[in-house]
Length: 394
Image 1 (cartoon, rainbow, N blue to C red):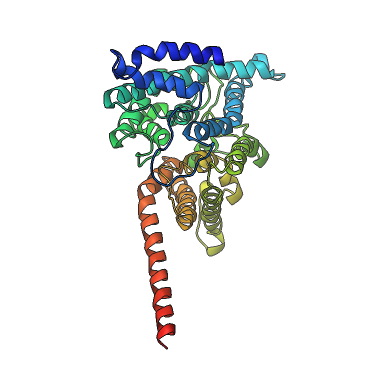
Image 2 (cartoon, rainbow, N blue to C red; image 1 turned 180 degrees about the vertical axis):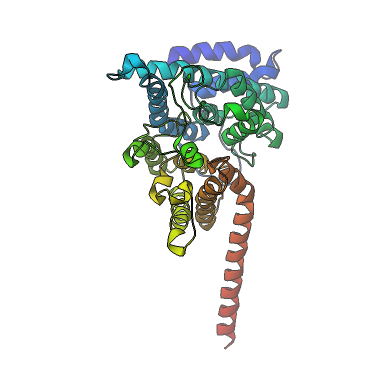
């Protein structure tokens, strides 16, 4: 590493203060920060020295995403290959993994190249350092997309997400909406035929006869029988967005986030509680004499393991920038995300997945939740102070 350090220091000399390439220093410093510990520390004011910086936080989230990503690559290939006659006797692991990786890796490359390119350009233009926030966003965007979405659509979605959803508000730490979900929302409303339906979730489902790619939520919305059991849904052997199908892998990532204190367990737990309560309410409709449909009658516990609910609650709702910040606010914020996610998926058969809209909605209301939580605490303290004064007077 010392050899790399020396060569990098020599390479950075023309970009130093007062040198002719000083304007482009943020781009070079970003490479330095990625390879080594950030070279800047706090200088004034009260502060706590800690070995955890933004880079380590982002890397922790990336590591938590790896199980779902690897499974998504394998499942992306498996969902296509196991329907072909030549794989009637089984699909070898590497065949499925390589098939899925051949579609997913290019999406990741496009996301990082375009997204980081824009971030570098804004850093140079504004004269500030490049932040590490896009390390996570650049991986999340492909992971929430259908496997057969054209690469240019991924690129356009990344441009919209970084410029409109992030840089327009000031960059990393200033955005009010989750950047990855902003990209997915843009793709959904700009290119709906590539983001919904029964041919976008499985590779080549629209080209090869006999290959089906409809998701469980799509089947329920259309009144079609679901050929999967609860264990299939929990393990992830179902069609869906690249990394959202395996609840087991998502919970493994959640464990990493919680143990490292990078993700809020309050938001995760309350999100699942809110979704379970909303699903249970709809399951209770027949007992009240109200006729339901396939989505309302679907077992409440299965709602927790299908669609993007688990992935959204664990990796999107816990975004420390766009989520609620107060302890009580996190409980309310997470609960409402799960509650609204199931409500949207059941009430809107044309769009039988609600986690994206639920999280974006609560991103907007997160500051309001925190405001009223803080005001409630202030009122309690004022009452407590008034009681103490009365006691002293007496």
